[in-house]
Length: 269
Image 1: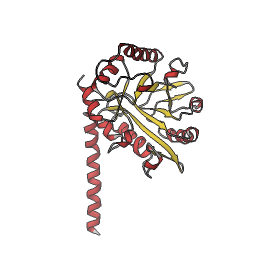
Image 2: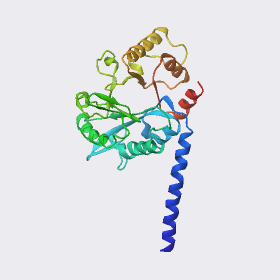
Image 3: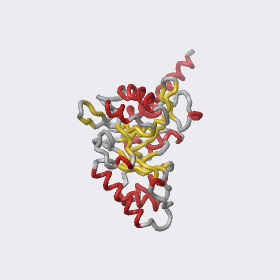
Image 4: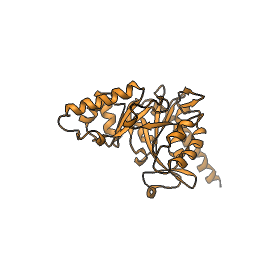
């Protein structure tokens, strides 16, 4: 009994020491506002690998299963305990508390891009209630007034746009598409325009970027920025040449599955 009690004391002492050390390590990370972790949950340490690399945007795909918001790309990947709260919202809240109200000490708002894979209306009805319990860290709109928080939730995938827009208070925003470039939705409702790279471009990130495609890319970014929206392309070739063109055009979020490579690219610019 005495040995068991000693082991328990040692466990809690190690935990108490480890937490502040982790916070100190995070404070030494340089935030990279352009870095977006695509399908972040597939990394060994969801969220934490991205944060330890300085990423300011992470993506989580969700399904509604027996009242729980489970994270995974396909249904066969879902596992009990891998909920949106446990993998993302809870650790983000802990980081915000440890770092003086921001995910990174003195850093920018971090985007949590939540991709609803199916049954958008039903999933959002549950997600809405979940997000309300994290209002202390989230960007939100109440009675038409936007209040900036440490974390901005943006809904992608099967987006019930009317349901989201009607909420008051509202704790999530909508991920727009290229067809929304002329939308009159306010930026706090639709802060982001996302599109597949291949929907407009066929350059594979090697050799010369066709001038007409470079002009189109810059036109898209300029239109989005004029409306107060950010831009992200998914399914992009992951080459330094393409990342260079995206940065030069002003694209706000660079999509990657390779955290090390994008961090090194952005850090060395």
